[in-house]
Amino acid sequence: MDRAAPLRTRRLLSRISDDGELHAWIEHCDVPPPGPGEITVRLEARPIHSSDMNVMFGPADFSRAMKSGTADAPEIRVPLRAGAMAGQKLRVGQLIEPGMEGAGTVLDTGEGAEHLAGNRVAVWGKSTYRDIQVFSASSCLELPDDVTLEDGAAAFVNPLTALGLLETAKAEGHKALINTAAASNIGHMLIRLCHEDGLALVSVVRRPELAAELRALGADHVVDTSADDADAQLVDAIGATGARLCFDAVGGKLTGRILECIETSARASMTQFSNYGSQDPRQCYIYGALDPSPIEIPRTAGLFWSCQGWLLFPYLETLGPEKTAELLARVRRGLGTTFRGQFSNRIELTDVLRLDAINTFFARGTGSKTLITG
Image 1 (tube, helix red, strand yellow):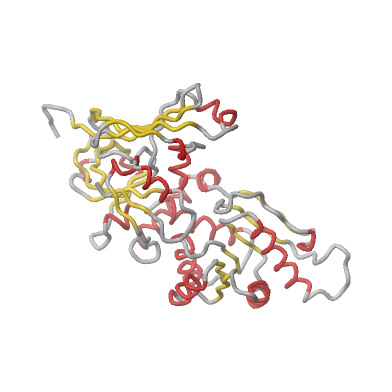
Image 2: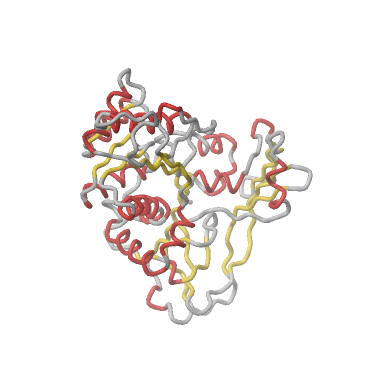
C-alpha cells in the first residue's frame, strides 16, 4: 500500500535512571512501513498481564509517585523501593516497551503477506502497548469470523501456558494434576483441557464463591483453602485422582501445604514403614508468585519431592518451532471456547499511567484482569 506520509502511533515507554528513578511516559512516533513478510496492525485490544507490569514498572515505590505531562501524553516518575537498585543495574538506561500480545486489524502488508490485508489477527512477539505496530506475518494468528478481538487479544500467553502445563504433565507420565489459583483464566482453560484430554484435575482456590464458580464450569475436584477442613478435602481429592504433580501459581506456604497433603495421601497406601515417608515421587512446578513471601515446605511433606520453576518462553524453546506450531493450531481452533478469557476492566492506553489504575494492575486476585481497548 502506497502512503504519502508515514502512519503515526502512540507508544508506552519506561526507563530507569542511574539515580534510581523510574520514568514512564507516552510519546508519539512514526511507524515504519512493513517489509517483506511483515504486516502493519492497528491494535484494538491488548491484555495487561502482571508480567507486563513487572517489566514496565519494576520495583517502583508508587507511594512516592509524581505525575506530570498532559492528558494525551502523560508521564510519571517513581523512585525505586529501598534496596531495589542493585537488582536493576543491567536495566539502567534501557528503553522498555511493554506488551506481549494483542489483536487488531491489518492496515498494510509487505511483499508476501498481501493475503492478510484487512484481516483481523492476533499478534505477539513485539511491544503491543501502542496504537499501531509492525509484526512478522508468521507470528500472527488469523482470527475466525466468530472470534472477537477480545478473545483474540489473549490468544498466546495464557492459552500456551495452559497447554504447556498440560503437555508437561503428559510428558512426565502423569494422569492427574493439581493447579492453584484455579479461578484464573489459565485455571479455567485447564479445566476444559483436562476434560478434553482425559486427565484428572484438582483445582485449588481461596474463597467459597470461587469454588462454586469452578464447579459450575464443570470442575470435578475443587478445594477452597479457606474452609476449616480444606486439608482433609485436598487429601481426599488427591486420593481420588492419584495426583502427584502440582502446578503452583501462588507460592508462600501453600506450596508446602499441597506437598504435605500429597504425602499424607501417599502414606495411606504404604505397606511398609519408612522414616522418610512415601517414596512416591512428587513434582511441584512454580509458575506464578501471587504470594510474594518465601516458599515454605515443612518436614512433614516427606523427602521424595522436587520443586522448580516453570516459565513459558524457555519451555517453548525446548519444544522447538514445529511442536509450538501444533500448540498454536490447537489454540486457534479453541479461541472463544476452550481458550476464552475474561476481562473485568477496559481502559484507554493513556489510562495505563493513571496511579489508581496501576494499583488495579498489581492487585493479586481473581477478577482484576484488564484490557486496553483504545
